[in-house]
Length: 349
Image (tube, rainbow, N blue to C red):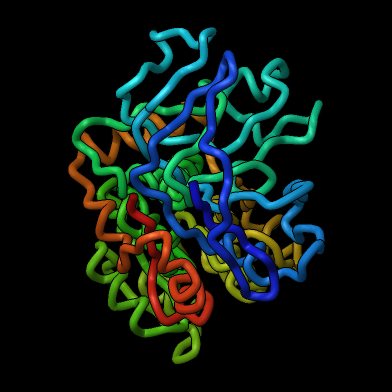
């Protein structure tokens, strides 16, 4: 089979690999949808052989890209319990695996494993940009029948991350939430927070992204290149500030603004990867009794809960995608994605 491999320096190729066969506790998926994520661009842009700047393990050899996999179980290993997963099941993949024995792995957070280097599918181990994918059975999360494979791919990273962050912020219909950045993760957060009943204030420096945020439920739009975001949020909240904020951009200015635009006893969450932030701890945090935290992806349980929420509330997650591709479109797809000429894309098999 052929799979997409990032070569570095903004180059990629379709490389031949043997068709996978499952080990005792593994499954092979027939891939149906594999999403493109902004974090793919780390591997796409880096120099050949350069270590990942986001802390992910560096693979020993060519690795199939794609960490938003969704498909149908095509084969199972002899030790896989049919109560866990079986041939024919529609599944998403939780794209990490750790030691499987520590407290983090046991509670569905293998990406936090401290005992062994984690496997990150699509980064250090083969991912979903191919016709088939082999993974440990414990990484499979059932996709509800009501959801498309495209939706499952979105939930497998960007949408799932947005949902988990909003859950930690305890967003409800009582809240005004400010969401910085309206790329795929931010747009997912805008869509989900709106369905949760919150009043959403969406920020982005590109008006076309703000227009999409409005379509996804944002009630107020702010372009920080045209007006001061903190002053505007205060104006929209009777001077108090927002109940909570979420930064998906990783911009230092956006992160600082996310903290400063919230009210006394407010909360701010950072999910944008990389970068830094500079804060004046006294006025920005201490004297507001602020809660500021980082959030990285989600647990296997959280992934399943996100899928159930989307299905139960009829959330049109498919609308997150602006482009569908075949694997043979990979070079042009990532060129457009890297240049910001398209929204979120997905490879359909």
